[in-house]
Image 1: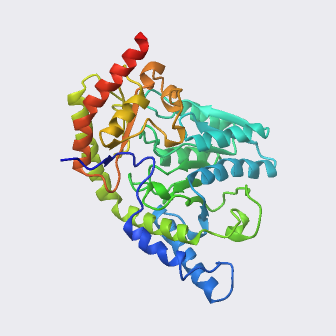
Image 2 (image 1 turned 30 degrees about the vertical axis):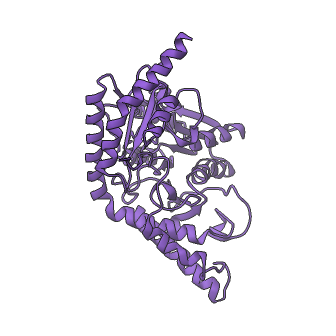
Image 3 (image 1 turned 180 degrees about the vertical axis):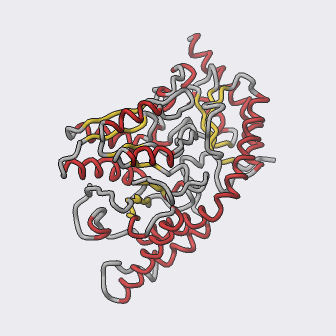
Length: 391
C-alpha cells in the first residue's frame, strides 16, 4: 500500500488553514469595496482591514497603528532596513546599517542596497552555533548605524537569537533594532510586548495564510521612509490599495498562531526530538547543525557527509518526503549556504545540507515516513556522488 506524501518543508511555506480561507472568502466576493471609499462598500472593506490590523497587533504585542501590511516578508524586510536608513539620512544621522551575516537574503540584499546608495554596510559575524558575536554587535552599535538587524529564528538552521536582550542593548545605544520574525512567530514564544524591538517583520504564508501578504511593525517613535510612492494609504509609509483578503487572512492566521503557540511549541519539540533520534540511529555519521545550541522546535538542519543536497532531496522526493536544502529562496544554488559558511562549516560538508521543517499539520506519521526512507535516499545520493567523483 502506498504511503501518503510527507510534507516536511514548512519553513519554505505552509498550507493555508481552513479557518483562514473561511475568514478571507467574503473579501474575495461580496465585500469587494475599496477601503478608501466612503460609501457602504468601502466601509465594509475598511472594517475588515482594521479588524485584521488589530488582530496582528494583538498577536504580536504591538499597537494597531504600528502595523503596516506589505506584500510579504521580503518587502517588509526591505522597508525596515532601507526605509530606516533613508529616514536617518534625511535628518543628517549616520547613513548605515549593521546586519547579522546569517540573515535572510531579503535583509542582506537590503543592506547591499544601502551600500550602493552610499551608506555603510556592516556584516556581523556569528559563532559555530550560529549565534551573533556579542562583541561585534556592541562594536557595531558604537558606530550608531541607522538600524541593526538580527533575525529571531534563522530560516535555514532554526538557530534562535536572544532578540529581547539584543534590542535592549541596541536601545541603550540609541540604535533601532529590526528583527525578522518570519520563522519565529507561532513556533516560539515571540512577542514584542515589553521589548525594545523597533521594527519587526511577519510573513503570512509561513503561518497558514496565503502567499503575497506580510506586515512590518514600526514601533512608536521609529521612522522609516517609504520605498513605494503613491497615495496616503497606511500613512503613506506603504501606499497603494490594500490587499484586504490577504490582510484578513494574515490577521486570522496570526490570531490562531498566538493562541496555539504554547501547545505547538511543545508538540513540535517532541516531533523534532523523535525525528532527530530516528535519523541519528539510522545514520550515526549525520552532523546536526548547531547541535547543543538554542534552536526553534520546527526546524532540523542536518549535514550528510559524502552526499550532495540536490541529489539527496531528489531521492527523498521520489520516496514521498518533501524537504529542502536550506532557504527556499536559494533553490538551484550550487554554492554552499551563506549561513553555513558564516558558521564555519567546511564547503564539502555544507553541500550535504538537508532542512526538515515541521508545521501545524505535521504528524508522527510524517516523522516516521522520513526516518524510514532517509537511509536509502542517503545511500543512493552517496552512490551518485561517488560515481561522479570517479568519473
